[in-house]
Image (tube, rainbow, N blue to C red; front, side):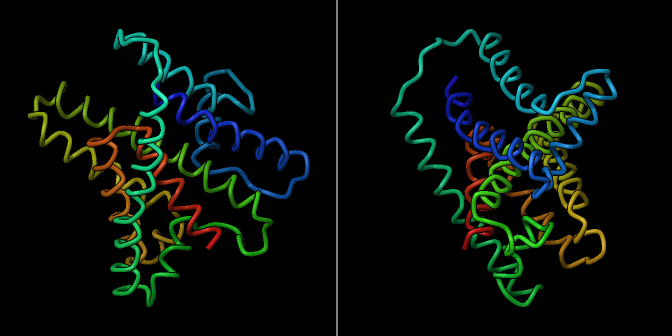
Length: 227
């Protein structure tokens, strides 16, 4: 419940932005969200807001299965917000180290993590929507879904021990995260950057949970796109 309530404002912000952009045609949707919508359409279900509803449904199901109390502590939500912001610091350090070593500067690496159209020409509300959407749907696809699937195959089917299975899952999800960004498929240096970012996000997800990694990813992209 805490993760759901924590992420609801981000979901609302992106969904409002997607509706406004659909009307104006001024902004592309997040690729990860489009992949999820394509999956639902392949299953015979279509709808602009299905990926958002999927996040809500997964977290509500998680709450029911866990049999935890349906009680939300405001202090926990505040701490989650501060922790998400704190996790942007090592991501920014990674950005500066890898960006300085390979890409010629941290600014280039920061822009690369949210690579896509010409963001500098977009109004700031659209950039906010893109940053929030990337945090939500890239983490849903590459961490919550892909890590779970790879861990299931490695641990339950191949009988690999739990800890090595987690390492394998994080590594594979990081490779997929890098290949997902077009810049990494044509430049090995960019691949290193995106792979390292994927390992860091995957580690945060396993250690601190889905809500924290979404918050950290969205906060970092906000820094990259706005500053």
